[in-house]
Image 1 (cartoon, one colour):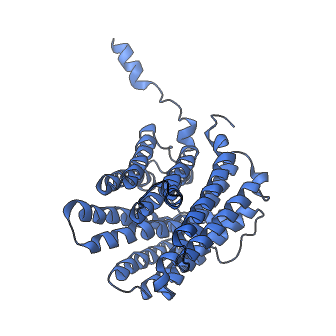
Image 2 (cartoon, helix red, strand yellow):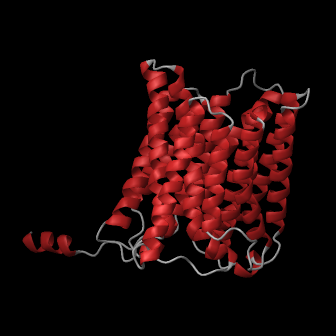
Image 3 (cartoon, helix red, strand yellow):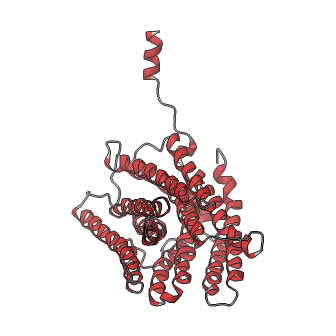
Length: 395
């Protein structure tokens, strides 16, 4: 009996599965399915299939479900590789995935408290995963300086969800919902775009990757600069809720643009491939939409959809395409003009134009229906082409 117990104690841990080594294979397709919930309801409403709609639910599904699933897939894959640390455990994958699904279901059903609690669970799991690899003994390398923005983005998500919870569960004043939405819908992914972009944009563009934090004095200064930009981004959200509806988005646009320049995104990528140029265009549409919202506050929502659709969403698919084709051994395809990239870029571009035009037209919901339909077509094409390859056990 003692010998058997001792053998169990020294048994080697099982090798990590393909899903643990490459979590993007799960989370990218999941993100597309969650996005269909948030986008599809506009098409259903326009066609008369449903009688109600929810702008609040739409925003939560897209930012907390769809985009967070893509972010989780990237971070759970990239962080262990960058830090030379173990991949996520099965429990982490299940917890994050189920929490994002629960968040989406809660938002779609207008159960705001349940959705925000699920979102907090997902953020806590991701923060714990990243913290153990950035700060713990298991890290073989340190992250690049721009990754200082990742915990700031997570903090924005936690603070935003807490504020929404206070509004829906405790009857807090309406400003808590307004500020909570700003943190969740803009703060999280503005920080992630600049923070992750500091590593990914040079790699996608053909430039050498940034050095590790602390490897040289310059990296410490760079981390301080990125942190300052994060504080400006989040501070501008507070200022906007306080009434600075013109100045705050312009400040935010300038901070994001400065971070992108620091990350090496000022010039188009030198490496070949249409997808790289799509990613470069998408990343610059992020501050462009913010600037437009500040310049024309009466069209704020329309302008922000330049950031959301042409920026966040298109960038998410471009990054997912780059990661997927690289891991699938299809670098030669990635360096050309894949048809799926053309379809996604064209459909998302047209969807952006249709959504922006909606506010200036006399057929608001017709334009929203077209925007939703175009977006769904592009994302469906992407999933049809790459989904089976991602979910295959061996490639």
